[in-house]
Length: 357
Image (cartoon, rainbow, N blue to C red):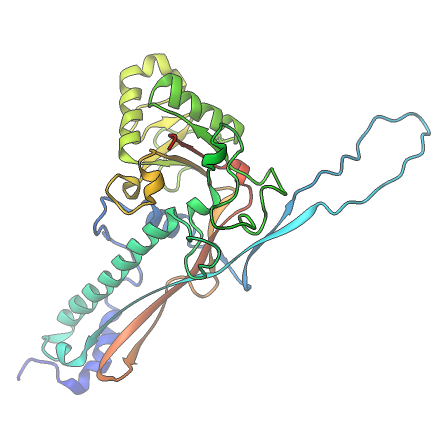
């Protein structure tokens, strides 16, 4: 039909049309949730953390030499040596998404502009699916050590132990991982634990005091606290919670700011001691977050100086295509892979405050 692309021209038309829109620019991907803090955190803060190798590794000083002492003049001394370091490592995990089309579909479109719109819609849908997957993954953890596909999210590194639910560095290991986070068991290395702050109510005397203690113990202080800092890029310290807790602290700040003083400030997001509190829709009741913690109104404190997401070099949002689809000679598609995992080099700089079960 006049004005329509013919089948023999489609294979070259699609790759050419793909060049007409910005490659891998994440724009307005809100799909089911009001916003996607994990998506923004990963893509804005960590996308340049590219490393090679078979996994992510770090060395940890887990013992003290204890060699220092008071001595007298000319007193003979003996230097002893102790292996103070242990290696922690996590494997790469891999995400995949894809989009495609039947060449006969595209032959019904009029010119490159319609192909751009069509291909873009298919691609955006695939990226929306990846955004949903990241939001689920980043705040969670694998069920146990037998899961060799799910990345290690916040709940893997920042944990709590209901059998020892007391304030302090009492988190223990992530459930289902007897060897501990990154292969370091907290029973063997007791300093390899995050801070836990139990609380009962969103009040100045309860939650605000608990947060103050958590920030103090974790040295959770920005060098230059700025009230208007961007919630993703303006600080290396962040706190994350659900809407109920976020709104409770915001109202507390609005109603009692004079008495609370510098502890809590009533800006767009509540700020405590210069640290912004960001609401995470995925934590809200009725969503798919871990059911055993969603109702406990958690507040996660993340120090980005010691917690990061790293990507396998060459495999950050890598697009492959267009490729002919197996057993579908009239179809083509693109594959997108992303190889990554999270890594924490100091759990004592992270905390979680939550209600008792």
